Image (tube, rainbow, N blue to C red; front, top):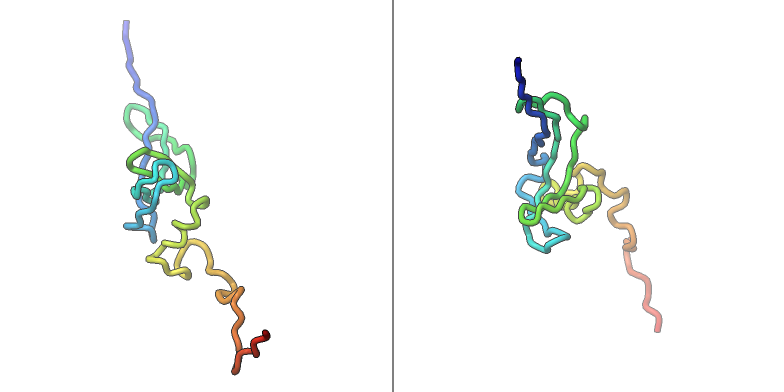
Length: 115
């Protein structure tokens, strides 16, 4: 009689996202300033060897290192604005089309005040 013992499970590879290195933000669950932007790629493991990825591109999330709360990065515009040191042109999303939108820009003299 031969007995084989196999171990199957899941292992998640985690790494910092380029452009968000060193960015620390507030957790929306516990309120601590311990949230970091992390890319996670879960794999199916067979005998402790990662075999099959569960996702192709992985998940980009804001993860709290105290309460382990995870939130997708696309739901955190405050964190997206901190990418690359706060430079809006270098983040993963394009900058707004008209940065002066909502502000009137005058050529020459401003209009006269009424009242």
